[in-house]
Image (cartoon, rainbow, N blue to C red; front, side, top):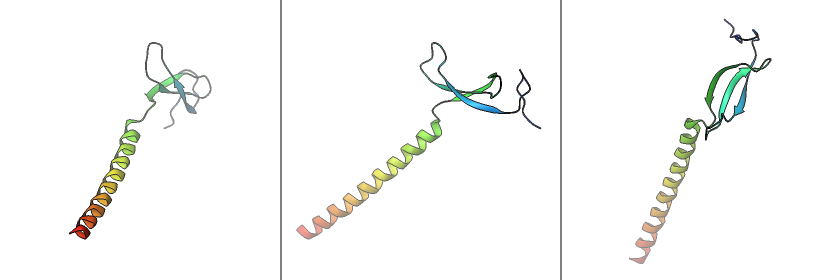
Amino acid sequence: MVSKCTKCGNTRFELAENSPNYSRYKFFFIQCSSCGGVVGVTEYYQAWAKIDDLHKEVKSLEDKVKNMTYLLDNINGKIR
């Protein structure tokens, strides 16, 4: 089954960035590439991508803390 625009019957779609009136947020409108009829809306900022970026940042910080702990333990051993 092929998805079709309810307005013109076209089978090709595209994402169009838009900020609806009175909205503080951007959205992606899924619209017909021929007539622009909107068939759906999705969030502009993908929360999963932000969460993934934060996870990578936390992992990097954890690695740095482990490295600093190792260096401090090494210094402490040399002082003794």
